[in-house]
Image (cartoon, rainbow, N blue to C red):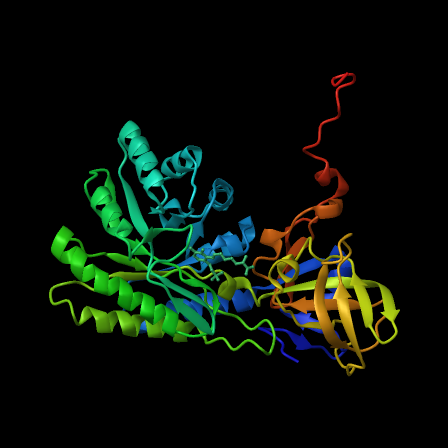
Length: 440
Ligand code: LLP
């Protein structure tokens, strides 16, 4: 059994998180229910920050809010002193509604619309991570029109793609994001942005992938970037004040996953940057920024479901259905992502069956977990699926007109509802009735 953060088995054999009985919460708020272990989130945020502070490095840890965007999580991470990465007008709006300081917001995206860029300029975001030539020209027009200066980073694709234990080095990356370092796009982009007086070019950004368990991909990316900075120093008299190395730090969804501690990733990055800086005589160490999403909120999230119907096909499979599925967690269907789960009200019982957990959507692919060892269960039982905090709620949808679950934060024996469950009325809120005879 792999319990995360403050999760533990209570004397009543229930799963407790943040000092709260998850079964009491399920009964109070209904299921499915997303629970977040606030202490674990704080712990992660502090772990990342401490690693930079111990090395005396200028830094920003920006929470990648695509992992889970809501007013409460943004307020929590503001209290922890983090910065924020937003990738759309909607994420920016949420951040501003949470009173997150605009100067600590970084605006990302490969196709920011003119309206979104204008929104960001009005809000006074701390920087825009410029992704492509089209965006440079849009942003120039807007800055000129408004006579407004803006801080920018250039998003670079260094030709390293990292995922879990593997990384691929490609001379030229086939990615929709950023300016390619290998084919001259990055050089052309740099010249263009340096030439425009209303841009303050802070530095560069790169994000090499997600759910990464090794430091090699990051150190290779740093090596590639800094090699290139020698050319930029000579040819453009430019050396970055900020190097943003993105997110992608892995978490342990199941025992197959072997992530490092947050501080291990950060320390490896700092050491490699310091090594590279030895090759520059007269330059100041740049600030290092990172953008963790999953590793801040992923394993802090647990989804509690009610168990419903079961179907046993002798010698084939035993299906156990829950009252959610691909509407609240699309990752198994979309990425074949693997999860662990426990019977939250029978944590003491030994597994006796191999079952597969099905969602309730009218879709055969709506399966949450294949071949899970569980004790006998009935429709009075609750299933806790762990590590659902990242890209769960944020990728939730209303397929089959199923409402999105509520979100509750738990900490130190206290709970707080931070996102309400969607009602049937919420589901039809945007619908308009057909005008009679309109199509006749
Ligand atoms: N920075 C940038 C520029 C990114 O594109 C991402 C994630 C992050 C930071 C945060 O990465 P993290 O630390 O969360 O791995 N929906 C997929 C993940 C997509 C990640 C996209 N970019 C999933 O559920 O696995």
